[in-house]
Image (cartoon, rainbow, N blue to C red; front, side, top):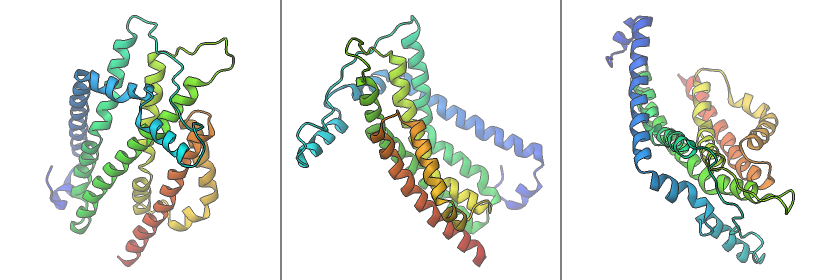
Length: 271
């Protein structure tokens, strides 16, 4: 694909599809390579990262416990109780979860490259002064995604594990969740948090297209709060702590997105 705008303008619809297809092919190859790496290094993926949330010395649990002592609550906020054991109930269960988890990890690790492919696809259609901003969006998107992943892994996911794993309707019932259930909870919550943190980037593109304005976002701020609460309730388990924990950064990101939209509209008006 040529970097020239004139050549880009002369491309037919089928040629655009062909270019887009190769971007998808390269993106798929990147995901596949990282998936293979995750599959090979299963000890790091499972024992060191995912299953670490079952250990009482997990960083988040120790942080909450230290905070509990700091505010004079003693052991109230300590979460060192893991009252369940993971089981596997099907012959192919562990192999299947190995493959699925490797794919999720592959997507997470390849995400910066996926944004880079998006940048490569849209760059020829941009003006010279816009290209540097597009590259900045790749960096910003990668940073936001990484922050979302870390936030989901170290805060939202551990609270979900603690609440769902230790919740009891009766002392006569023993919790023995399957490994599929546990890993699905950890990986889904973590990945969704990474995607949700892309809100400022989405607002930027929508503002560039003229679909939303800062005035629109301010006008419907109250509606956005309700949507954020509902979204947090869907992503997290039904405990108030994890919902609030996810709602707070989402509201901060929304306010930051209003500022981004304002800058985009202001620049468009000047142009």
